[in-house]
Image (cartoon, rainbow, N blue to C red; front, side, top):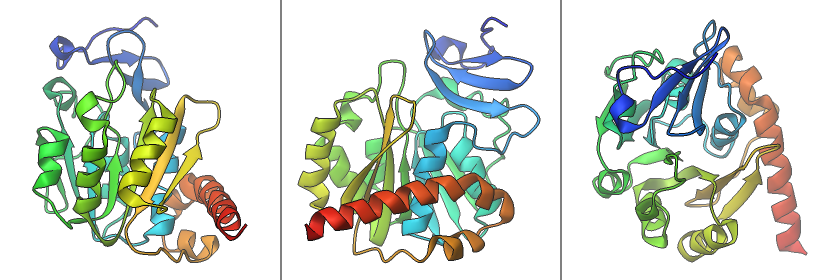
Length: 251
C-alpha cells in the first residue's frame, strides 16, 4: 500500500502510512519514526524503543519520566500503561505530529500524562532535577536538529535528571564519535553506547550517581508481564554491555 498522508499533520511533513498490519508515522521521504501494530497498539514495534526503555534496569520504578519527542507515542503509551507509579511528561516541537495523536491511540492527558507543544531545550530548562528517567527521541527527516545535537543540550539533560536519574537517547543518523565526545564532556565516564542490531541507531545511556543494577530477573519481575516480555532482550543486551564496560574499566 502506498503512503497516504493523513489530513492532520500533512502541512508539517508528517504523514501516516497504512498497511493491513501497521500504521507508520513518517516524515518527508521515507523516514519512519514510529510503527504501530493495528491490532496491538501498545506493543513496542521498533527495536530502539525497547532498547531505550532498558533504562528501567538502571533506574527501576521511576516516579517521574520525561520524554523529548513524542512521535507516534510508543514510549509514552508504554510508560503510561505499564508504569502506574510514574508521571509522564512529554514535549513535542512539531504541531503536525501532535495532530496525529488520536491516530496513534495516545491517551488523553490525565493526572499521570501531560503532553506539551514546545522546544525540547526550553522545556528542559524549566525542569531542573525533575526526572528519574529521561528519554530523548527527537529527530526529523534531516536527523537530530542541530540545537538538540550539542554539548549544551546534554548539559540541560543532565540538569533535568534527579540525583540518580538516567537518560536514554536515540542517536539516529549522527556522528557517533562526536556524540561520545559530548557525552564524555558532560557526564564524564557515566555513559554507555548500546548498538542497535540491523538499524542505523545507537542508544546512548548516561546517568547521575552510581547505578547499582539489580539482577535482571528481579528487575523484570517488578514489571507487568506485557512489559516484561517486551523488555527482556533489551535488559540482557544492556547488562552485557554494562559488564563489558566494567571489565574495560578494570583492565
